[in-house]
Image (cartoon, rainbow, N blue to C red; front, top):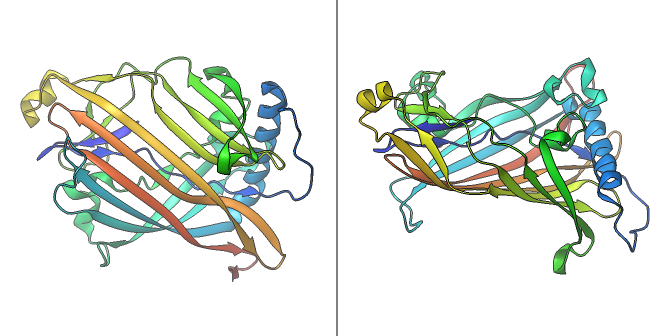
Length: 303
């Protein structure tokens, strides 16, 4: 689901970004021939499952900037900047790779450089703020969800990505029929919608450790979102909204931790571009993750 706001125009609420922490496994030798896709997916899935055992001990700061853009991608108006403390919560089944048992939790602590006010959680400007609860973005690589996608090996990466393996993916069916609904969280002029087209993209995986280092995703075609008559009349919208672009790039980086000494692969940034027409507002967004620290015992935090 993605959240949309009526344009002064309406803003689309970007896909919920979630914290993914993958332990870096040192050693090993990069194979000269890529493993077959099933073997590769099994190794990647094992690294993600290992993340579930560790992620609940890590917190970080997320800074998100949302900038409305015009048809030529030129900025329109002012950007909105929000900051959160972010951590992962998981249940007992998480270590078995059950993505439904892992949640990313955000606590908003700053809006445009100031402390948040109560109205920030309901007014129109907050439509594009990150979801307080979200699922982790690599869940589709786990065994429970692989049947929903077609995966193909893309061989080794090129240039600066030469030490990676590439996986190409396409979802086998749309998320839903594509209908606009009003935001359940109560933001004014804000809407939810699901993508009625397949998504496709590429995953770059470290050829030695099999951790994901980058994911790029886009729509397989234009998306027509139907607007119910009630919403058309209430918000003066057209009978449909067309999503022309929905591009997402997630990058990861290695962060050292102490006590015990360990390196972990964590999200570095998420970039998104959503271009729509039909009374809604297009935008770019950037999410930067920093200040990673780890809970040890009794509330003790280690950088």
